[in-house]
Length: 215
Image (cartoon, rainbow, N blue to C red; front, side, top):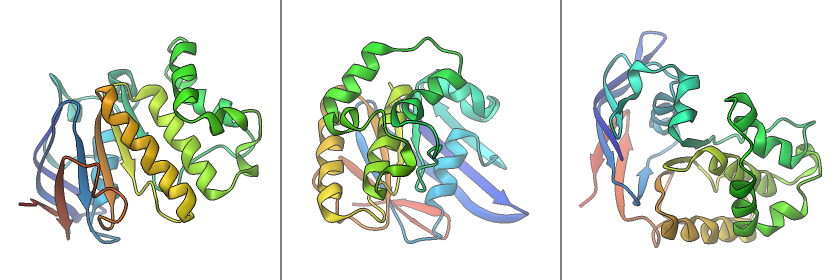
């Protein structure tokens, strides 16, 4: 599904990612483990086109992503859940979930929204509330729901459990575990294995912008 080869990314002429090699097979959950500042977010952003590659290849099926603008990537069914959620505070929960559909000028997928609500009925329960009225953990659920609207093939989850209370962290783990049966390819970035040790199929370690496979 996703193959990254010899990827280099620099920000303000400072190398951040160095010769990254990483693969996410179809219908597989892959972990990306590293400390804060190791390069996890930059790697996620480079896949989405938010951080430009200096060199290398990011291949999604037959599509070379480095040759596509960032706005084109949602049309390839990539969903992205950033670490800081990036919800629009004054929009309702449901409006936040549908925002990428509207922004990409694709038809409202009511069936997809209903499926997301079936995965996370609590999100449907507060779908009419302003996003700013939710707790941090609830906002993470909404950010995951929004990513799922477009992420029909590949899902990128950047620190999904960061700053979330234990009860809601467990709920997020349960939802992500349910995605294993849906045929999605998922890349999950975390600082350690605390939450995903039992659900990921393969794992990479990132340190100072370099990625290595675990044994």
